[in-house]
Image 1 (cartoon, rainbow, N blue to C red):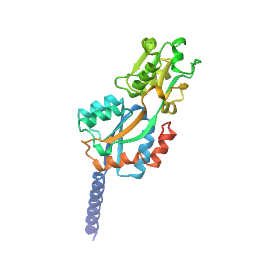
Image 2: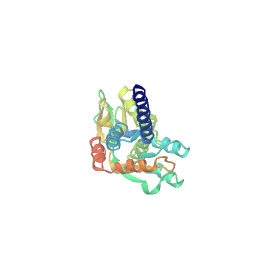
Image 3: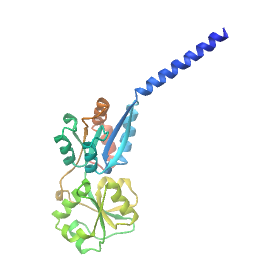
Amino acid sequence: MRYVTFAFLIISTMFIAGCSSEQNTDETTLPVAAASSLSGTLSELKKAFESEHRDITLTLNYEASGKLSQQIRSGAPVDVFLTSDPKWMDRLAQEDAIVADTRIDFAQNSLVFVSSRNKSISASQLSDLPNMEVEQIAIGSPDSVSAGKYAKQAMTASGIWDNLEDRLIYTNNAQQTLTYIESGRAEFGIVCASDLTQSDLIKEIFPVDKALHEPIQYQAAVTSTSSTMEASKEFNQFLKTDKAQSILRENGFMD
């Protein structure tokens, strides 16, 4: 009888282990590539999404939209792409690198001229800057960083780009722009309004007139090479839900 009980325990343990192993194989990992201006906010969206989808785990990769687009075109394992510049989504669409009917607008943003906490000037608009004591301004590289592209548009429309170009410090992404200003490597910078919610070490000097640049529209789409198509579509659709939109608004984004 003792041997029967022992055998039963072994079989039961093997059965439970088998079920556990099978359960693990049902879990889905979803790689998401996102513009770095979404960092922090996307972490909150991840928690909210995963709380409703216990079998799906998001892995997040932040970088400039242009670089992420190139990585996807080169075959990087990405299931969902979130960009702050529709131009990069257009390029992927032209190469059939995204699933066309999953492309959505899910948020908007604006630009602000900022400084570190211990620096200030009495400017109220971009056209004031050439006459101010402004030595270094950090912006994202206009060729690959969406915020930098919009900043260049605004400075050009204000007629100050040529005057201030030699004072600009180009960064690789939105997070690096913040770091430069926080550390004092650059006195001032132009960042997205949502970035203000991510740092206590910078302050707004003035908002940049939205009429000076293209709308900052965030888009998302499932990639054509997604290995978890249904889960990817679920997360894509989640971005439009009331819960996701509430999180975005709390972090400085607009509908």
